[in-house]
Image (tube, rainbow, N blue to C red; front, side, top):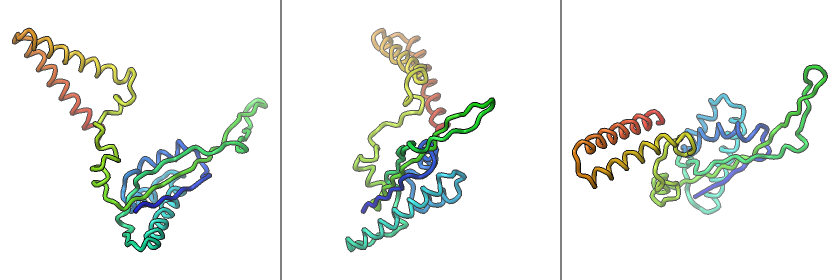
Amino acid sequence: MEARASAKYLRGSAQKARLVIDMIRGKNVNQALAILRYSNKRAALGIEKCVKSAIANANEAAEKANVSVDPDELWLKAVYVDRGPTKHRRRVRPAPQGRAYREQRHFCHITILLSSESQEAEKADGKSGAARPSVSKRAKRGGAAAAPRAKRVAKVEADTAREATAGESKPQKKASKAASKLGAALRRRKKTEE
């Protein structure tokens, strides 16, 4: 059973609301409400109301379908924030020496999708992205951040290919050392990211 709720025209920028949304995505409803209750962000209040609305929508839909749904079993399947309009929300702030700074006041739209199916079943179906390999944040960004790792991997692969064709012992030891260093570095990076 799935239920949806959306809150439109919330005051505040979508970028600031996403900071809060990222904390609760994929969590159980009770955990999400606890995080939102004690969050220090202004956007948390509107998001908390939206989560409570989604829970009420799930209960209502379950009653209509004559299905029993435990609110404690619900989890946030999809949560996202869209940018709202800034038209008619442009203001002018006084600045020194008779100048005026333009400022835009932002709105955002929040959409929350709750699900009562277990998260393990979702991952097994492949909908949640379980089939995707885990990639570090630096590799996701690409560009210069991922370049040093790509060079090391290419170098290790070239060394292993060279030693496979030559069959010499010294390059083999060198390549195995390089591969073990690379593996250790990747394990350290993964630990720090977690």
